[in-house]
Amino acid sequence: MRQLPKQMTAGAVALALGLLAPPAAAGGLIRDAEIERTLRTMTAPIFQAAGFRPDGIDLYIINDHTLNAFVANGNNMFLHTGLLQTLETPEELMAVIAHETGHLAGGHQARRQINIRNARGPALLGLLVGLAAGVAGGGAAGTAVIAGSQSAIQRIFLRYNRGEEAAADQAALDYLARARVDPIGLQKLLRRFRGQEVFNLGNIDPFVLTHPLSTERMQLVERRVAEAAGRQYPANPERAYWHGRMRAKLIGYLDSPERVLNRLEGEPETEQALYTRAVALYRLPAMSEAIAATDRLIALRPDDPFYIELKGQILFETGHPEQAVPLYRQAVRLAPGEPLLEAGLGRALLALGRPEADAEALKVLRNARRRDLADATALRALATAYSRAGDHGMAELATAERYALTGNVNDAMLHARRAAAELPEGSPGWLRAQDILSLKAE
Image 1 (cartoon, rainbow, N blue to C red):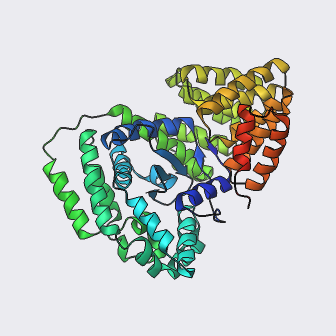
Image 2: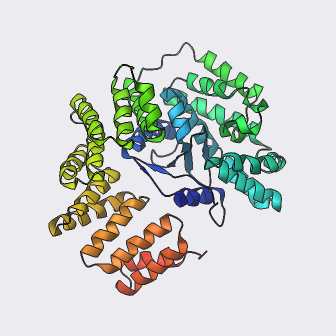
Image 3: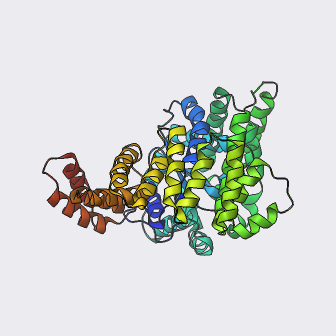
């Protein structure tokens, strides 16, 4: 699992809110092949039930411990890691996804954007800065800004939200029914947040600020769930398994490793607990123990690409690329078409420092880049691979694309100019450099 630079999240949030420049405070985006695959399996039936393609909505995972999710500026859905870690059942998480999809299908974001564009003055500035800090984990500072602009939030951003929230609930219940997912997840979700509206802003989950509750909403959901009580919803142990693994992995990566290991002390060693332990040991770092724990996971599931990837990552990051490369190859073979795994293989090959490995790395990283345009770490490795191959124009282009992706427009344009000077005029790479040069400088 990798955390992308903070400025990348800032750029994503700024894009979502329609800002001209990214906010100063932001946490990192999370990129992880296993977690993203798990979320794709959970979102696909919901998106299809709402009339979207399974890949028609872009998902972003924000490294933030608070419970929140939101959609913004087109078909973009943002999920906080705090929400992914806390919700105990896949039905609750799918209810969140269905609710946010209801906002997209209902066109609610378009009306919010109009309200934001029509707003003027310091109140709007406080609102946008507060929201950006809030979704990015701004803590007390973000809360203070929001508190100072609360009336503006209610007037500009949330004045029609109660009706929209009820509409999104209705839509979510329909989508869940079509996807044959128990709607009790939505009921549990709302009960989790009920009563928080009377708290002060320092104690309230952001989900309640952006999704205000009401008695009418609760009554609607309670009634619909009661009506559906006699229906049969097929058990999905596979979905529950992968949801549990996602939570285990996030806890291992994002919580304090010392606290995680203390909590696990004396607990039964289930597969999920062992996964959390392996990741926490890797972060401690206690690499030999982490590898031993990962070996036990692989023994449980010899063909699991993500357990194999974890061992490869540990070996690569401890300076053993020769041992990491075969593991990454195996992971890519077991999960074909996963660009994040391919990018990991490419980085490990480059670490070997041999011409034949460099040539293979270039091929692998180019394939990964074609499948995933939003992996800044892969673009850094791709630039290295092009440079070692003597293709300096494409190396400059990959660097320019990485800077553009992370919101560093000035450096992106600098490297794009260098790329354009090196590449044949009219070639695909030259045209991509021109696209970057058309960006507005800071």
